[in-house]
Image (tube, rainbow, N blue to C red; front, top):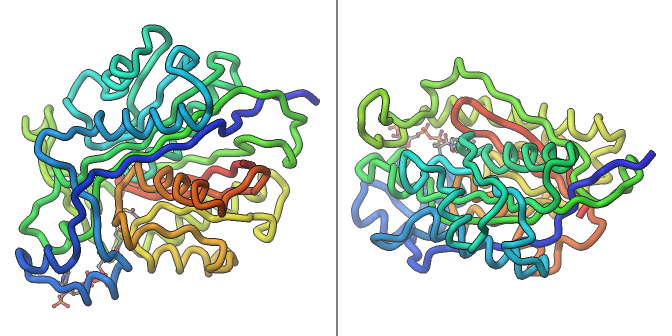
Length: 325
Ligand code: ACO
């Protein structure tokens, strides 16, 4: 059987220059390097400069991904950008990226699924490719969470960072078997009843302000491992593979304890887990592509490896994607 597969043609990432360590935060907040490291695994995070926007990070990551794919903006027919921190309420940040990359055709739109945004974006682009409506898609996760943090709230301010990652997905013919290269399966979920556990207390329609991140951390933690494990198990079952077949597990980088707990629950050894949370903190929709870029660039993820992605975030939203690199 001949099928269309979305094959990863390139990957890129960008982090703002300024690094903020736990020790620096402890000088302004009632917290400590020890508490942050023990509870989250985070040591430092990158934070944007004044005037540096989500689109700036997204453009730099996209240019790196295009270069890696040996493609140009004129080759791309769809941009899907996952972000919860757009430059403006409208238009979509994806259209700013489109203009600045010099792309004058096709379509560009944003996806809002908070920390799960990149998984949602991969699922969306993959479906456009499989439907024959796009050939080369730029899939981006980009965030400036530092702009929506309450810097006086130690329970959230220490957890997040800024950054962007991108991949290019290109249409290729496959056999329909799990040995094909490309996106093998995606699973996305949401349950809006959990709004109050993780949200931003502002927005154009409700308050006419941008608002700040509010979170019941313990409750989010409790749901995260269950939801993510379920999405992983569904992915593996769909393609008739087993967890032993997974070469690399690239989870959303929220908290080292969630990464470890999920890997243990689904039976993936820690040596196969890509973790960047210590250096990047939680960059929401950017965390998975940032981790992917690091593991591809340092040679861990290689062609034909089976790579498992997952994320969970506000909404709640969650999901998984299984990709043969
Ligand atoms: N520094 C020092 N002490 C702190 C800090 C801080 N930054 N933050 C909270 N504390 C205190 C609390 O006030 C509390 O004090 P108390 O015992 O006197 O009341 C104590 O530390 C323990 O707080 P808990 O909230 O119980 O700590 P917990 O072990 O649950 O860790 C954390 C908190 C890190 C937020 C954890 O619950 C977590 O990671 N949850 C997942 C949330 C998450 O990652 N969300 C991101 C988006 S969703 C996603 O991506 C999965």
